[in-house]
Image 1: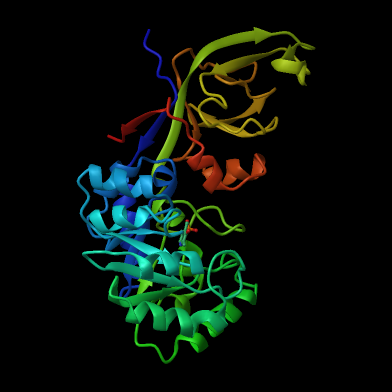
Image 2: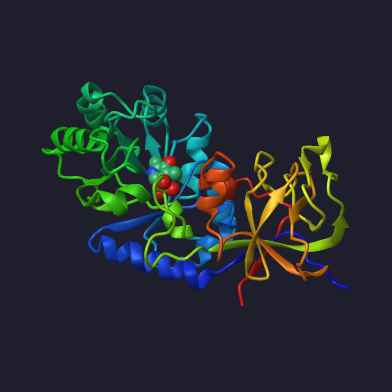
Length: 359
Ligand SMILES: *Cc1c(COP(=O)(O)O)cnc(C)c1O
């Protein structure tokens, strides 16, 4: 008896396929592939090494960038929130890391630094999402200061971020694009605005650099859609049945006894739980794929296990492989049941989940 524990099966051919499709949607743009949060749970170095054509990588934390350098990645790497401490500037310079600048503190730290090699800077403007970015009225001052600083490699890149790009009907995106165009029209610089949803829905947001994340991993960023034609899931999360049990009508299953069987049935226990990153809030009825059919999750998700109702006539056996999401069951769908988004499910995968390459 050899039972597989929770395993994320990673399909690097699917990743290449998605990369090609993304590039074909925006053939003239360079691609900054977003790898933050451990490559959206898929494995930072694994994904970086499987994207040989990417023009740059984007991460959110300096440690992620340093891990990529330690793994031998030499491509440009951009810190998407910039650096968090003045001391980091030397680390950026020493490791050839690029940084976003979105506030006065970062600007002052760069201008006042004493660097041997200038830093590549992406200046982030807030065009309406009101999270990170300088205000439009600050652009000219920031641009002047950055263009005159000996610590900054010229030319800089201008960027902003879209807050509502996943919704085609939302006029906020058009307003953001229009404002970005107005603000940057006179500056002969490379520009960047599009995340995955921008790549898919807003061609006018592509400019010289697109910044896809979720779509690379084969998952739709659009709240209304499950699956995008030609895009393939990179991660399939699996585990195995570790018990198949017959229970009588009226039996309560799991912690709190929150699910009670209406009739006698067979239940399956699958070795995956919130300790692996499976969402604890997934309710009764969340689909789980086993032997080619969907069965409902029943009872509470435990740390290391879930229970499913296999049905009285079922023939599933201990050891059978169970898919929680991925090929055959979109993570987008599971996210709806768990009242979250696929981004969160993917990057919540924990360290004890084995990573295995698809055959
Ligand atoms: C995370 C991130 C992206 C990628 O977003 P997706 O929706 O996953 O494509 C792009 N740009 C910035 C600045 C980000 O932080």
